[in-house]
Image (tube, rainbow, N blue to C red; front, side, top):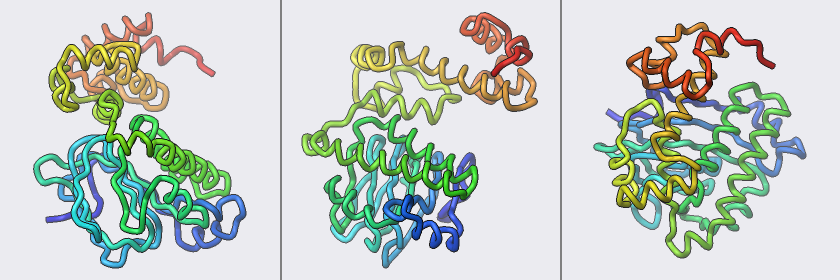
Length: 289
């Protein structure tokens, strides 16, 4: 069984085509417009086939797992830290690896400036797999575009999405020299993976093995990049998410704990007090804003 979408935890937003056509006449979005955006976590059985290509250009950023794509020039493999970029009209088939399905953030783009922006990133007519120098920043930009489309399809939201996409393409173009040398930042790959999977437990040794480094070297590089070790960084991500849930939902403290990866609510409470200097309940009751 293969799937185009329908993955647990997915996010997806598609601009209605009449609204798309109208936005392409707006000077502020005619040059670059995000028509579709999404996030597919561990997208098992994901498969997409377009013998004539897509009407829009496609950018897929892989943050964990593995995927593949058949292009006119042959088959390519997508791994964490890679971006698959497909110009409009490029025939393709892509999907998730059977044993280690990818997690991907993606955009579909149209507009008069898109061909030049892809050319600046060294993307030819047959598409390309690019090394992303800062995966976490690339994901943040896709998320910014996706969040704008999820909000509504007003001109201001479409402009915000366009700005994020423009920034992403500019970063891909600026990173072409690193790609030529074949460099990829393993710590940024690990950080992006943790941001996706903050609620799951993974040892530091497993994180290091994922990016091909020894534990000691990985830990040193991670601390230099993030200002703390991998475990503390994961705790910070969990605490950030727990604050968001406490502020925006009526979930019990125990439910919030489970949502961010703590099966033991008492351990979560100790961690929350250690980080915030107050209990989760007191934090929720505190006036903010």
